[in-house]
Image 1 (cartoon, rainbow, N blue to C red):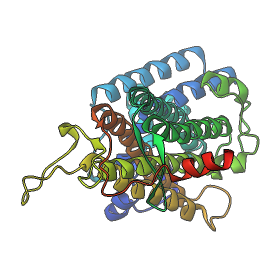
Image 2 (tube, one colour):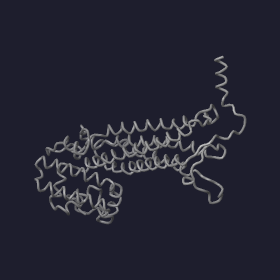
Image 3 (tube, rainbow, N blue to C red):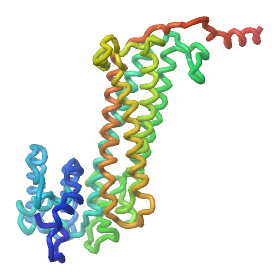
Image 4 (tube, rainbow, N blue to C red):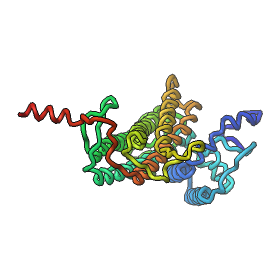
Length: 377
């Protein structure tokens, strides 16, 4: 495969370096977004007079064929000298195969620097909305249980000591409120990420008179990125999104912790369905709340992704740097993990039955209410 930047180099890229530097396996999932951005850019080049009608039609047809190949799972090489540097190189190489020299014209006025940010922002919008949908699914499960068990009285705890009686429904709706804030954070982050970087080029724009606002509207962005250097260097949107994911996972972990405690024989409050528990190879009598434990454990993974992105940007000079290639793996994994955890937790709740907790000894949960009654009298 001919590298997009390879014109001035006398020696081919070392194969170890090719494998080390390629992000293709990670960013293959951006293919549909790369193709959407490429179609929008082709129309912009046509409007700017760089492409004629026949060339535009040829490129749009070629990009549509690549989209079909991506959908069918037949797109792209996988190893050796044919391993692409990234999804953008792979798409362009295939486009040149389909359209000849016309395929090369598509890169006019565009760099992989503004291209990749456009791709990931398009992906981010879908990923954020998908996670919001999953949050709503978990909230519905919480509301259903809260309505079903609003009359069931359980202890509330401070310092993990029994404090006062509370409705189980009220306790469960506390988790609903935390998730409601999470939805607001996702929406707020989406609003700040809603600007199109295409046209920023490598970092200082392009002399080709493309209409960035038309391109932004074609791709569903509400506005364009105002500063070209910031457009390619910024990854705040990734950090904000993963930060929201980390908070969602933290809230899920607290819910999981309660389910784990409540399902123990010492508490006896919750009975998680068999489909979401496992046994012990050594102690067959046990029912382990594995789904809840895994959600609690995977929270560390998403928090780790947030830390990865923060450290990645710390001390990085402005403009595009190859370091930024490392943003996508943490970003994708955080989204995938959060979405899976939300879905499994909703199913866990749907399977769970609650009952009055066991009382190990004298119960003084009503003491505060009794004292307040005495004050009133």
